[in-house]
Length: 518
Image (cartoon, rainbow, N blue to C red; front, side):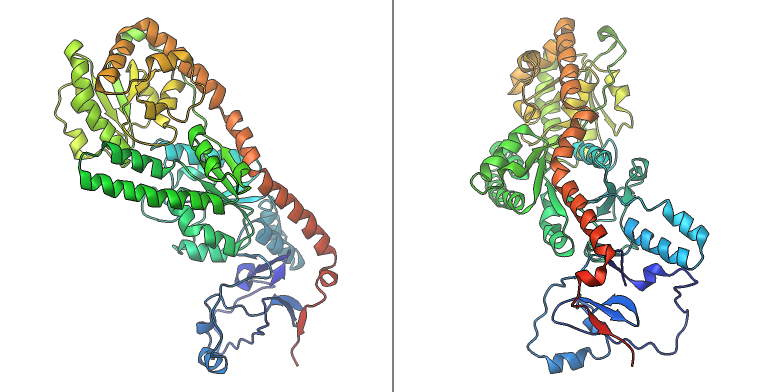
């Protein structure tokens, strides 16, 4: 049915009074009109749609007859004459009006509270994010919050149902869109035309669903890079000691780079967290006229400075999501090579390993001063315990949550150049005391930060001030607003056009085919 300028299946309008669906029927006969293109028709006085083959022709009894009559017809992607919706504010508005006409005032009142008519955003990722797991989850949670601040109603679609439950989404007002375990492709089809912005997180998801988003909507498509995976792979190939494996990684990096930059070219907007990666993507898009569509939008970091004084804290901590290969390598390098140099001078310094999905080889490293704590629900407790955190990354890409989260607690973080990459305009205290490349340099930086209260305090204050200037909610909201303004502008224009069309739909569409029962 064509209502509120969208197409809604009759089953989604059932109210038990004026729109009913019989439990049993002896015979149901469907008569479809198929035109050269999908269009609106008037059937028995109600505006409906002509037939469109969206992989549904074989459901009908005469599908074989059609193939015999038209053997040369080649299947093509369905193109709809209007958005098709199964749920959401516009569907609720249509159901409310039908309920009012049927005298169902209580149902209409219930639906009226749901009709906010906001712009709609869809976030797509591999699994539901989980608070505190990794930088990617922290970023996507904060980006959803910023989208809601910008005025969007936000829904989340997980490509895989296995993994986290996604219960944390409700706390920030985000709806889970998985419908009856339908495939993501089916959900895109069911929700065709509903969304004004579709946010695809990481290259894997963008590669799989960007074309599908184009087919089923006119939404602004945002490719959120997270980090440039090809940079991580090429750097990993340079530290890999096995020559065959190194060549494999270099080949993967080349293919991934081509894929990532191709997706950046295809998307309407590109979001990245890192200043360095934003610059690299802009350089790759130079001359295409699409350079301006790259936006740097990191994520906000809670600021909660530690309360325990320096003298009552002890040891160092490494924080990481251990299904992320750079973190596995970093933990092994830290424990097997860096910390032994530290222990030569200070054998009583503890090294705490913290994070989700910690594998047995990390838990069982077997050194007396190394403690594998696994996932901690509250990192504030960890920061109150240690004098510094470490980020000994030998390869990687993007902004590191472990670094900025530590700064937000006024706890210095010591790491390699890769750990601080993508953070522009770092204060001199941090560049001088927190960065050490190579085993000896990193060990020396850890010892200095652990033993010198003056150096520690200087870096703690510099890091905290840096986060306060660059990683607040208000700062992220402003950056996100700039990135999504084109989608909001299109939504406002569509809303104005819909109001005009609603006044006289037939005057706007004089070519509607009319089908009436004889």
